[in-house]
Length: 326
Ligand code: FRU
Image 1 (cartoon, helix red, strand yellow):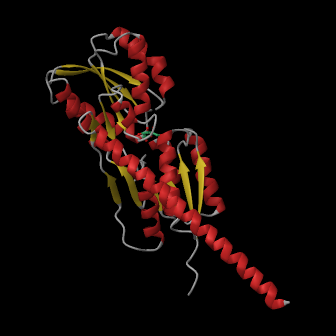
Image 2 (cartoon, protein in one colour):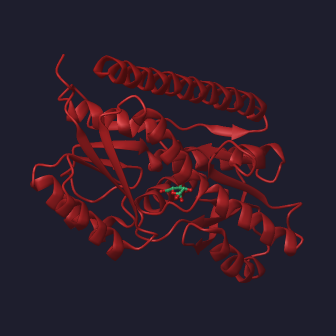
Image 3 (cartoon, rainbow, N blue to C red):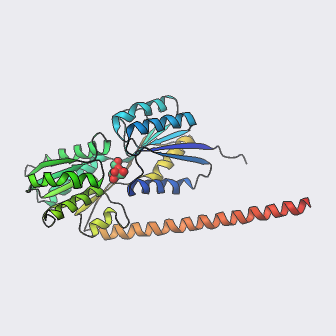
């Protein structure tokens, strides 16, 4: 039978430095193990848009068959992604969008909806009355812009709720530890903090604790990762009242990429669902994700065994050749 065609996929990642991005990469690698003919290359832009642009240019020079990209910031990354697309190289946008329609497919959550669901949840948690502070993701990144839009528009429909204050961040906890104390001191009446991810939400909790506001101020985050320091655990420990599930989508991105490369039908918009994780369902979520993790470990063990058997077979073949030649 003819060998399957080989492909090179380049993945331009805005940062690879946090657990959510690592879960994304783990999902990609798991899915890639079904396609041994694929060469997969990742470049980490370390939150630097100029570096990301340069790295995508490197991909163009080195030669790739498909680009997967999580744009560090929407505007600066749009032109180079358009260039890739215009050269006839398919582009899968993962999680962080560009402004242009010139891409092959999108895989990721609907961040405006994440903001809307958070807004309605927060309103009901507060009994439709209260002061809310929002900790935003980095300016100019599509999830921050969209989560904010959905959240602010939804809160505006509740006359008893005010979006009292906002704090910008760079998506990472130290920026909250630095900026939130002054804002909270200026607005001690705040009842609830909505943070655009769980790392920021944990930072907000630490600040509230320092200022002895942790008993009163409730905190809601986004991501809902499993694992020791993930959002699911933070909800279970009652550090967060809730988190909005936001799937990293690594498996789905590779699956979509392979459909594109193999010229099979695919959807342009592949929206991963969200849901509220709070005290009512956190245990179920925890058990489900733990079960998934253990099943994934089983699969990996089976793959290792299979590889060992292939290696043994290959070395036996070599012995046979040597004997036949003698
Ligand atoms: C991870 C992250 C997530 C967030 C997403 C938005 O790098 O900061 O916490 O949901 O990026 O793109």
